[in-house]
Image (tube, rainbow, N blue to C red; front, side, top):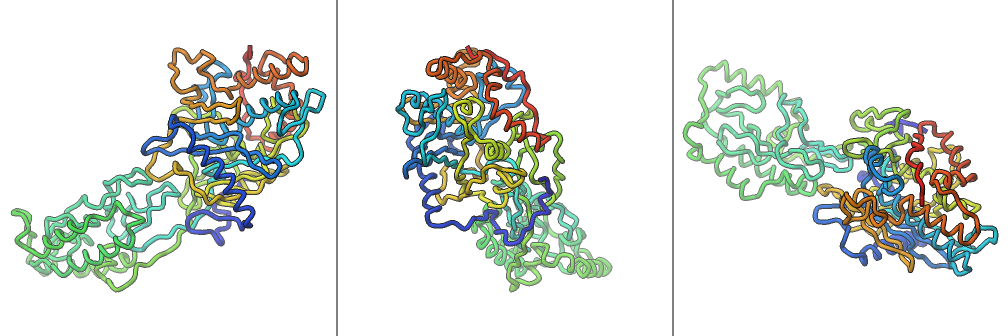
Length: 569
């Protein structure tokens, strides 16, 4: 179902964008137990591949439940995805094209299953039973849970939230990835907003408040940088010279700075970078109250015509209504006893994932008119576009046809689904997750319980951090491994040696296919095809379900057969 995000109801939406489901005590224990398994194991991993200073990443894990216990079977971090050009330039089947944490964790499950199937044929698996026909089945009570420290990219991250705005200064809310107080046109003065110049920690845009000088004092105004007095200087309201007086109004300066410092103290958590030090504010007020502090050549020019004085007074009368409750200087100077007014504004939490060809493009308007919802999207990437669909779209597919894939499906007669999906805690929005992961599809076979853990990941996405370029995949157990990837290959291998099997991930297409072939040939006596494409085509039941799924989503892009056309020997 494709909708514009503005068509969604904003009723009862919380201001921070997270809408938690009502959860029972047992659910909270379950989701925190699942999250704790992943977080604790991550802390025990070596430092290699973990985010460095100033970096963030996503952590995801697959947990199996059996006989009342939980066991971690795959853990991954990652935020990177290759472009189509990069994929075509590599040896086919050797490079990981999608290194997002959820996708890597699922590939770790595929490896874990193949190892368990091997044990099942030896009648020694804790989770699988040999069916005696070259296939296996799950023991009673086996369930799977997915954890992710961040909502899956794409449709699941798009939702409406209420943004609280101050009438004196606009809140800088990082969720929409837009700085609401920088670079906008000041409609009351016709000048560009002076909140520009410093780096905003959420957007990287310039927002400093000290770029212009007060011509009456020759000192920088500590918050706005605009002219603050209308006496014998350039009037910030009119842009004209004022002839009404030849003296600086020290009381006006002191009053404005006192009120301004009070405002900045109460709003420091929202725009901390806009708050100058108290000492600079004190110095500014002293400079304004002492005419001798004005440097030579900077004195205000005194105009003697009564016409200019009358013009100034009339202009102030005209501009006052437009400045009321919208201009920082006017609010402070006109009515210092009036409390800071707040208003709520609807906005859209945004994703960098782009609509695939065939879907209706995002309108990219302001506020709630920025995104369409329910559409298929490609993962974002710099330079050439990626060929990988968003994690929201992949999870939707897993909830319809299962997350077992074509290789594993040839050992199982029924699909594998997640019983629960735990997301967050940050960024969790229940309606958006429900829509993205199953309700936008007409007939979803599985609707996992969506849970929000209370435990936080210490490398979670944050305003002024950059995504880590490294990915980690950890599969516990005797046959497990811990590998670090950069650009789809194991870390530490030079470009000249990327054609060496040792540089390839244990969950690359070619390695998984080789493991599959060795198990089938050893325990069933059947010799599977050598071509990777032929191995995948042997999964008749799975491929039928996949074709039906894609028929209901006509914009789902077809994968080029070229990527699967290679020998696994």
